[in-house]
Image 1 (cartoon, rainbow, N blue to C red):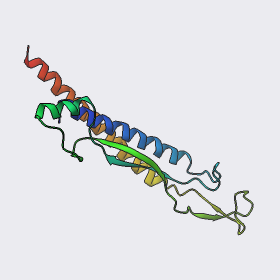
Image 2 (image 1 turned 135 degrees about the horizontal axis):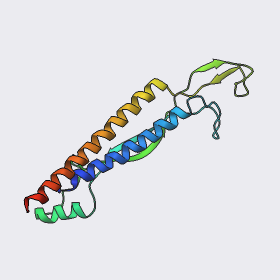
Image 3 (image 1 turned 90 degrees about the vertical axis):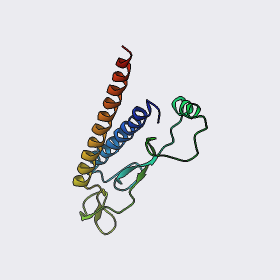
Length: 152
């Protein structure tokens, strides 16, 4: 990994966790939405991540300095990327409310499949992961600054 590889990997984590917090916030905001533009109750959404290969100048420079091209495949420390936002298709709880305009023929209204407690736990873990990535960026930045001070 190059000198700035740690910052790059942590930056990808920052971006990913920010997206995750945005999706969780959207789930919490729609926890009581029984009618959406697509029809039916709001369905919980979640972010799908995958490891990413490091690309760009720093990756190419590392390969040249090592005297060979970078081997194909992923290795740890390259970061993460969001590949999509999926919808949880499980059915939400049904409540009997025949007077509700969103009720089905039997008088039941489907509520969103959002569990507020689970969403808050996810929000806390995403926030902690974001903080950990900020700490890693600051540590890498501090090491780079110390390396520059060696030449003084």
